[in-house]
Length: 171
Image 1 (spheres, one colour):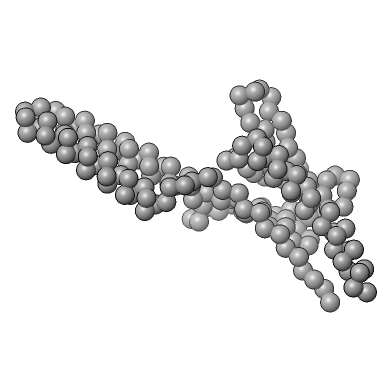
Image 2 (cartoon, rainbow, N blue to C red; image 1 turned 120 degrees about the horizontal axis):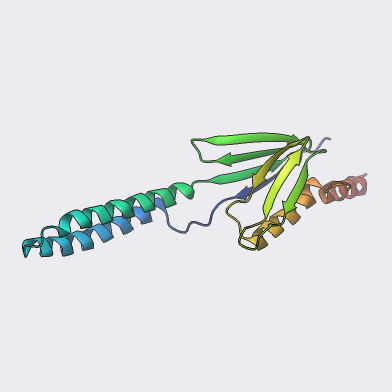
């Protein structure tokens, strides 16, 4: 009996605000801001209204951009023979496939302290950077986990060794 194994790792930004919550927040700020602006406009300070409208438009745009960034995903699927990296949003997704036996996980440290390290999966001159939205410690943890699943340059992945022990135990 042939067992097919598959491991999936999903990387996404930490967004605690949902679309519904963002809309509720925006409407609440609009109600407060416009009510204050209307009071000033009623007292004769009408130039307040265009500035309040501009302020609310900028806030709405910033919330929209922030929520769109929250839709970003990186899904790394490790099959028996290949590694698939899919990154992007639901509407626009990039897919890169590597042979599992040749794929390598590479964590390059930053050249300057103000920059973050770069985590990539690569093979045969192609590479795909992953983990843009992760902190340094999260990148280290992800690199460690991917090396366990994919293996290093001169090692067999630990999951294969565990599967061989399991297969031998059942014989």
